[in-house]
Image 1 (cartoon, helix red, strand yellow):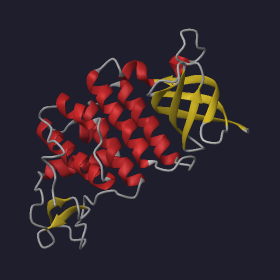
Image 2 (cartoon, rainbow, N blue to C red):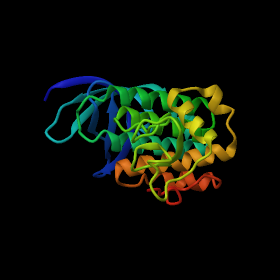
Image 3 (tube, rainbow, N blue to C red):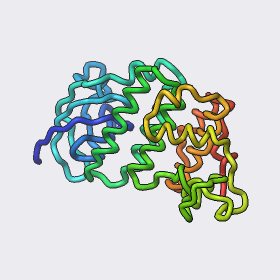
Length: 255
């Protein structure tokens, strides 16, 4: 087996046997990796606590046939400590991890931009300087952009006209009156402006937005993300319960 070293974020874990655990990570150079951490569920494990979701770690692995083997782990940033202490941040962070996992389908295929985006998102979430749902929506929009699914927000997704009237998921974003399909949502202009600010990283504008526009933005972004993933993000169910004013994905199921 060949030995390699990388840094990564723990996306999820699952039990294996009596004492081992399978760890799924998104790494800087290798991409998504699944590895076995032997004995980490034992009380005296050397690095069990370092391999929890949200952790940003430096690790060494041996390549295996189906699963690699984790041999060394050092914590770089324990983002989980701050995230799990707050329910809104925890549910938002869980949705971020699940989305990163879903958007990086192939194992060991480099995904540097998605990795950097995830690390930056978790850091921002842990610092607590912005509302958790704004951080989550910014992460969703930028992840979609990295995957090639960024919604059109400044001009019609179909004809390029600047006079936009509605938001249609299947069209790819905002549409003009002539291109607007039946049933398309008609969000407030401030909601679209918020989406643009989150995509661009304009936190001054995002932080100044009103709660009703944040709620409308969250519903549209969640629906748009799940349309392109073709399956729901399970963690979003808990996020929606935490923010009762937010439009749910089912409510925002727009043609």
